[in-house]
Length: 163
Ligand SMILES: CC(C)(COP(=O)(O)OP(=O)(O)OC[C@H]1O[C@@H](n2cnc3c(N)ncnc32)[C@H](O)[C@@H]1OP(=O)(O)O)[C@@H](O)C(=O)NCCC(=O)NCCS
Image (cartoon, rainbow, N blue to C red; front, side, top):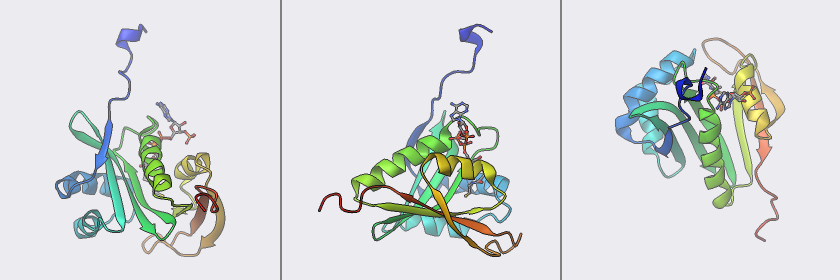
């Protein structure tokens, strides 16, 4: 294969999510999660810009991934992350996390946490690369599947930094 016939390099860019993006987010959510959020839940999350920060990766006008986080004091909570089916393994989730973690560190946040299904090894691998570590299990966390969730934490910065 010559270089010119290979897939083009990554062309997505990251921007803040807007209410008009909800239909595309809903489609990804429904394709990727056994218990997808509803349109109303997504709209509530996107609109709550006081405590939430939702970003999307856009490639040629199409949303190929999104990440939603919540800020609680000096902690970042990863609420959701989803990649448009067929686009996994391209580094989209990593670039969304990179961008958000940079913003979180700049805001002085020191810790990050999230829940992930025990069977979701792909997502766990991604989080472990970012320094997340399992600290516990929430039994029966998911209503529909009754699956347990791992609770992961990561240290974003030395808590004495900036003192
Ligand atoms: C889990 C999920 C978010 C990962 O997203 P992703 O965009 O595929 O993740 P990335 O591409 O950034 O990284 C995944 C793998 O691709 C590899 N990768 C990164 N950049 C790459 C590139 N340019 N080309 C090929 N592979 C690449 C990474 O090495 C990584 O492998 P590893 O995790 O085994 O180390 C995605 O699979 C998804 O949407 N899953 C369903 C929803 C879900 O489970 N969300 C998490 C809930 S907690």
